[in-house]
Image 1 (tube, helix red, strand yellow):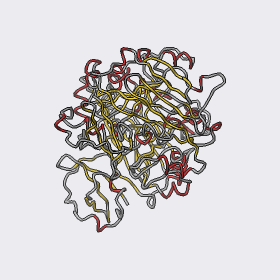
Image 2: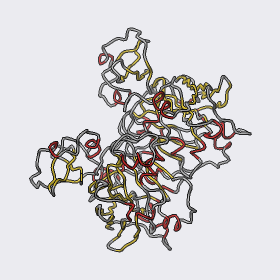
Image 3: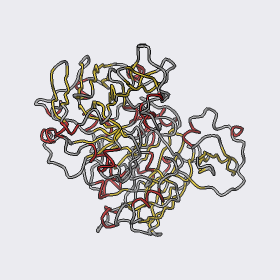
Length: 290
Length: 290
């Protein structure tokens, strides 16, 4: 089953579900809200058939209560960053404002050579239920599905201090989508090919079976210290091939097109854009919701 | 002017404002929602006079969209952690679930000697308006007020990886309150005494004029990468005297009482409690809202 979130004509957003190849509207404002609704899997719950109206895409989840991200989680990426295999997942947070649509422009927050904007293709987990002190089996059963993310990172800010947040938290720099795919249709444990292409050239090519901490392990671990709920998002880390690990390092420039794809899940296509005027950037790439 | 949030009899919460020494109820669910309401300063907006009914306290803001925390921000704490003065603020995030009331028990998430729970008295800023690419003057004008926080930190988890989040994000471990005090009544730039006492003994004693990045500077800096809104919370860092910097290090134990006080703003009083059964801990210290 596939689910997505689209912007509605009234300026709000709504979740849609795909049944027998057709998208149906729901009463929920986004997939996160839909997942928190009992009986959401029932086709009868979704009556308004879409008439192929042009849709403006939104992030699969627009206002998650939590976004937890894992760094250093693909063995190939750990190697290229000259790290040893960690005993515990390296976790940091993102704000909901970082999220943007699968086809949105990503604003360069300054001259390319100064800000060092880098790509990070990631498998994203969307949580389907409340998890607290969950074991791995409970955590696995609590996964609503998977989608694609790119954790675009402003390396110059990320490396200003020991804590990565400020380089990972620029508004509207994390595309999430285009669709949520439920676990009965796709299993990252089977090794899904994950690719990041920049201007058509493969920069990252990995497989989700290279993950050190798999989705169920990550959710169980996180649930030891905090409560996960329907609609929360966990980004699982990026495979080898980031720009900062290249020799010499390569970063994104105005006009670059980045495609992020995971086999069986979906494809993001985002253009990098430099708005010399910061306020223009806020207005152009900022999300509709305040 | 002082504002607070209390739990209502119906299980929800509501903001209250203090006018001429009396607390009045408002229609807002918490101080964050109140700050986002135009005209909230008007006494006429708040009609239901409280009848001295016993109130159950809540965090001043219960569901902020963002909590941004600054580490290494008091010169005395930078010194005790053997750090040099940073050029940029070290920022990390917390989830709203970390917040708890000024008098709530704080759960030790395991045996005291294993988890290494430490105290961090902090001045907290609550944002009063939308800030994006704000200069310092705009940021200063956007401060709704100040309150008191303790960023209780699970050092054993904080130090598992390079990123501090997991040691800072245990649910219900950050008391925030008891009240928000507006900037016309109190100015941290004047040097407010900030103290953390454990079982009556002063462990941290500092002054808010020892802050390297002051409140307006922090808000302006954060607004360069993300949008701050009414009700968002910024924790400004802790002064010298944390337990992990003592020789030998000292950590909190079952039954310890921690008082966190900032001159002219308020006092938190929290007891440390170890629940051997994790689910008991969730039920006892978990917040009412799901």
